[in-house]
Length: 453
Ligand SMILES: Cc1ncc(COP(=O)(O)O)c(C=O)c1O
Image (tube, rainbow, N blue to C red):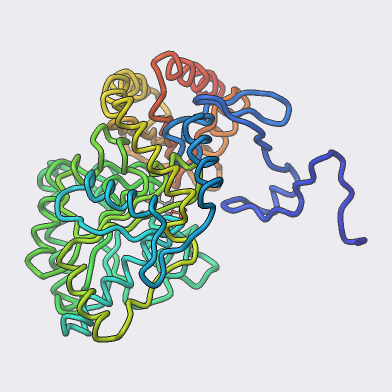
């Protein structure tokens, strides 16, 4: 066992390979070890508290110690700790959760298929789009459109949809020439001089149509889109963007998959980003706030048209040959059901809409700051984009690491935020945040910003 480094504390974190980390730098500094949570705060191994300004990874809508979720998990563990959904069987809670999701998601999404992560749900949506087009005699219609700065996950297929270099470099992604790239609807960054938001939207729609025509509409199966591009920098589409995009997709018989992994369940002040941005999805992927992040679960919601086609095809082939051992696991399903009950009992949408004006006002107050290029926000989500030259909208040299330095300073002051590419600092506090929690969040952020100057 000589290869093991000496442990200097009771906890040796050396053996954990850290995702999204500069592994070399990490070996010198070590991780921040989090040991417990309470409300909107988490605590490190030395007892220091941090306001979790990103709900963990856009997940912990109900904060970090909701007893009803603990109880739901315990009770489910005691009654049925595992069962699967293969070959015409199903745990009762899994069936109940499917029914509940069909009830609360937008009209037309009539079936739920469970996975364990957002990446898997998006992978599954790609497979279903392909299966669907094979089933309806369109085997050539297979390409998938995703956008610049999209984040749809990291598995081979969903990682190919993701449009961020850091998630692809070194991994041979995108792994398929079936992936097409459309532009990002970020008016501040990609709008041209003198162009109105409305003109920008029209241009984005025209560009999409040109891409479709150049590739051939009969070769394109689906477009994936997050209502708000989260990891790309909290990019909120201009008004009218999705209706225009969707009209084009409909014209060419191309499915729209709404990736609601971040927006789903109240983040925008509406139950779904699709409702907030006038999207009528053919499929919808859900995760994160579905279980408040407490247990891994994701869902793919599917339209009745797709389901009926798939059903007939499975009869011809003998089986619908897709499923994950832990997809629809009863314990995360029980927790998710309880999460949805809590959203109803506490009227989470009213809660979000009550505090979001304060949140947005505080965030927007940084717009005049000399280091800030743009502030964007809706519901209880937002970002501050740092800029080296405010008027020219010039980003900082990425090698300076300005965003990561600010986030590090926030951490020193007891606030956890995340720096996205382009030095965008993302804010996504738990949905249970009250005004005093947000006051404290911004007080800590003020201190960190003050030191940056
Ligand atoms: C919009 C979106 N889709 C998909 C994913 C991937 O989810 P997971 O990390 O659970 O695979 C994420 C993760 O942050 C996401 O933000």
